Amino acid sequence: TEEYKKSRIECDSKNVGIVFPLYFQSMPKVVMDFIEKLDIKKFEYIFAVVTRGGKAYQGGALHHMNKLLKVRNSRLSAGFYVRMPDNYIPLLKVPTKKEQVKMLNEASNKMKTISSLIKSRHVGIESEFSSFLRPLMHNRFIRNLHNRYKGFNVKDSCNSCGLCEKICKFNNINLEDRKPNWGSNCQFCLACINYCPSVSIEYNNSTIGK
Image 1 (spheres, helix red, strand yellow):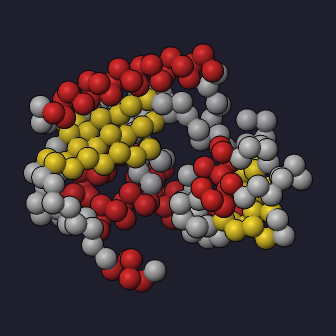
Image 2 (cartoon, helix red, strand yellow):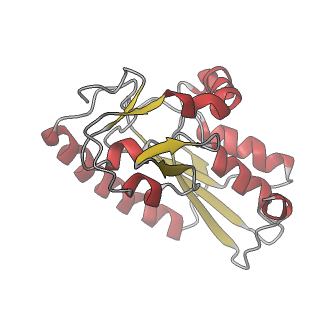
Image 3 (cartoon, rainbow, N blue to C red):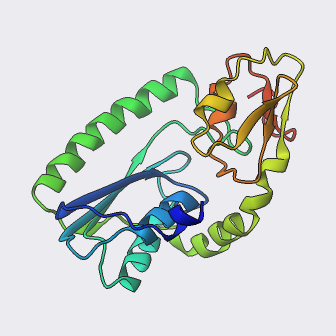
C-alpha cells in the first residue's frame, strides 16, 4: 500500500542484525526496501548474516549493504556468510541428503563462531571474491523481478491444498478454479515450489525432476 511505502521502521536497540538469503550475488529486494525504511540514527553496531548455497566464494551482498548504509551516513560493522543447502532449483542441483547434513552441521558450528564475534562487537566483513559480479547479476534480477511470476506453472497433480497461497509472504498467490495463480508482486523466493506437498509447481521447464 502507499501508506506502507511511506512508512518508517523504528528500532530503539543500538545493536541491529539483518539476516537474509543471498539473491543473485546480493540481497532480496524486500531486504533493500527494509534497509531504506529503517530509522538508523540510534544504531551503533549493525551486522549482517547472509545464507548462501553454491560455492563458498559467491556473494557481494555485504559490500552492497554497506554501500546502502553509507548513503544513510552509517556503515556495516560486521558481515558473515553461512553456507546452507541450495534451494534455487531453476538453476542449480539440489544437494544430496548426505551433503545437506554435512552443510547443516558446518553451518551450526559457523553460527556459534558468529554469535561469539557479535557478542564481542567484532568489526570486519568477510571476503567476497565474486563481488564484482554483483552489479551485473543483481541489477538485472531487480529490473526483471516484476516479470518473474510469468514462469510459474502448475501440473495436473495439484490437489488444491492452498498451501502455496498461505505461505506466500507477499499475498501474491490466489487459488482460481482451485489452482494457484501468481500476481506481479512476486519476490522470487520459490517457497511455493519448495513447499508444495504434491510437487506440482514448476518454473518453466527448469525445475522438472528437481
